[in-house]
Image 1 (cartoon, rainbow, N blue to C red):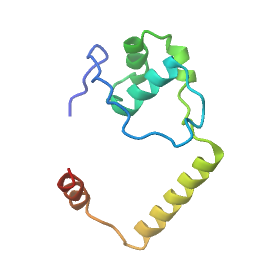
Image 2 (cartoon, rainbow, N blue to C red; image 1 turned 60 degrees about the horizontal axis):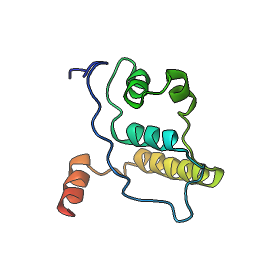
Image 3 (cartoon, helix red, strand yellow; image 1 turned 180 degrees about the vertical axis):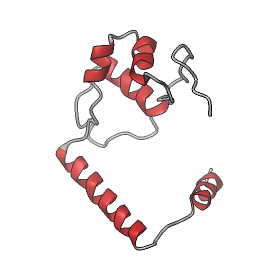
Image 4 (cartoon, rainbow, N blue to C red; image 1 turned 135 degrees about the horizontal axis):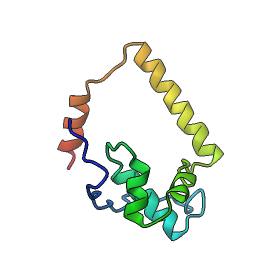
Length: 110
């Protein structure tokens, strides 16, 4: 697999397909929103991916690096960890589903 290189343009950010019922867990300014959209939709295989993101957004690299948190509140983080622990337990118990089957089922829903 070839890396796209630091000078390759990023893909256009995809629009958000879901939103929180009561707004974001953490208030985001416009730079934060642009950054999150790029990180969630265009984070490529790069030697220095955050430098590519900073260049694309025309933001200082240190600002991009400082904003790299998960933006989850404590409740969401606890729910995520609970789901991850359940997934690990299922995998250890051999309760696995072939990835091709999952992808096929998702594509069939389109």
